[in-house]
Amino acid sequence: MIEFSTWDILRNLLLATRWTILLSLVSFVGGGAVGLLLLFLRISKRKAARAFAKYYIELFQGTPLLMQLFLAFFGLGLFGIDVPAWLAAGLALVLWTASFLAEIWRGCVESIARGQWEASASLGMGRLQQMRYVILPQALKIAVPPTVGFSVQVVKGTALTSIIGFVELSKAGTVVTNATFQPFTVYGLVALIYFALCWPLSKSSQILERKLNVAHRNH
Amino acid sequence: MTYIFEFGWLAEYYPQILKGVLTTLQLIAVGAVLGISLGTFCAWARALGPSWLKPIVATYVELIRNTPFLIQLFFIFFGLPSLGLQLGELTAANIAMVVNLGAYSCEIIRAGIQATPKGQFEAGASLAMTPFETFRHVVLVPSLQRIWPALSSQVVIVMLGSSVVSQIAAEDLTFAANFIQSRTFRAFEAYIVSTLIYLCLAILLRQALVVVGGFIFPRRAAR
Image (cartoon, rainbow over the protein chains, first blue to last red):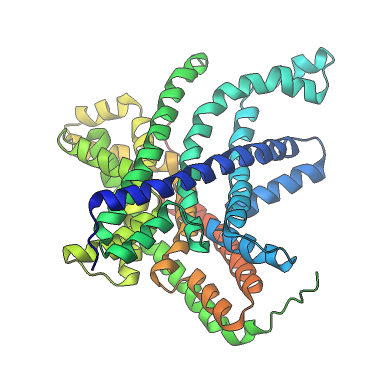
């Protein structure tokens, strides 16, 4: 039997970590773009747009991410598309991330005082101008800490893509375990790598919350 | 698209689905009760407990909150047997959920405790209550009431997260969907049905927690 040193295990896990990081970035950026679109729909003046965004968010937040991954993986195949695991994983994670970011950002936009909307309307601004020049710059400041905080959930969410066969950190953990028969060491290391990715994000979210909250402290 | 949807298998396989739903419900029931209890203890330890306990609890909370549930599950189910601790798949799933919810609810409940007005602690002390008695009889229930909505959302998130316990062969709803998929090759239908069941469970669980909250907290909390 081949002996594996801890370094062998760690090296292979770190190589797979690149895919976890890449998938997290893609999901977060893509989810942010779709989430922004959903945000506009969610606070739109049209009832149908609001309802669509509301049910979209309810649907994606009310069902397990794992099921969404399965549906993306098997559902796209129905349209005759040959679905590689990375595509299904990316698609499901983008849609899932978008639903959470849209809801987080809606909270931030709605926390802006009503008077700001009215004041900008009285200056003759259109809805988009109001958002662009008055509401979003203020909402952005409140939105940064919870958005950074949610990025932790995205990184952790990528672990589920191992189940549909995308080889990232968790899948590498399973593969390496099967080769080395050292589940305790391998999963322990996998957990530590995830911790090393997520903890700085959690911490910076907390620090940002304390720093950016200055303007709102005197309510 | 030439695919024809086919749900005829539902009649044959509904016992599996029912069993899966019951397992999922059992997991979240045990997970919620024990997890919130653990979380309450940890919140007490972090906010008011002895100073030697604080860093231990803080480490536990940070470790759990910054690693995926799937890895925690694998670590408990595959990793712990090498320390001589062999667990059944349902026990492992239950432990993983309790440990996971314990860490998240700790942070939520701690926020509730820290939002307690200082006067409440002083009032307790002036009635010659010990710090623990003040916590138990004065602070705890209003603190829980303050954060009950956040806690309820977390319980729903953990319930949805429990779908990954199928990966260690615990026979929950996702396991039933995988089983049906492998028997009938009706992957999309099997998963869409179980997804809708999860959605219903999430909505029902949220409502149930509102009702439970009404029973535990009959009066409005002091703000």
